[in-house]
Length: 188
Image (cartoon, rainbow, N blue to C red; front, top):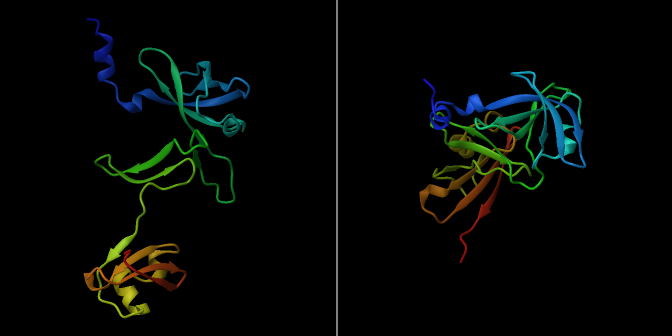
């Protein structure tokens, strides 16, 4: 029994439709690349679309492609695993205009943290505390509100709404083993 194309597509998951491809060559003039699909070893020319050709010039470059169930292949991102001092892999987003996003999702598929191709995060994770603190807050008070600076990590930001009264605020940052702070006022 032959299934209609729509029922075949409905049965596929996004994982089935995304594949990895090795970049063989790049034509910057036409913004296209010859790639070899890792799943089938098929070699095909694809338009790079919004992917910057310079980001796939490396001989080890790989791209993620969307394999349409109706035919056709579209690149969706670049995977780069160029060796670094820490040998950390990276994901390169396909444009330089901030239109591509990389997100970490929770188990309900809701974004927990996202970054765009310009490095802007879509969610500032600033912890808010309503602890009752001195003016200015002490090291011990900030440790009680947020934890030790060496544990929360460099660059951690916390906002103290002093006593939860909405009239005195302290923006606090962890740097090494120190807490730094600045007073904030309410706009008139």
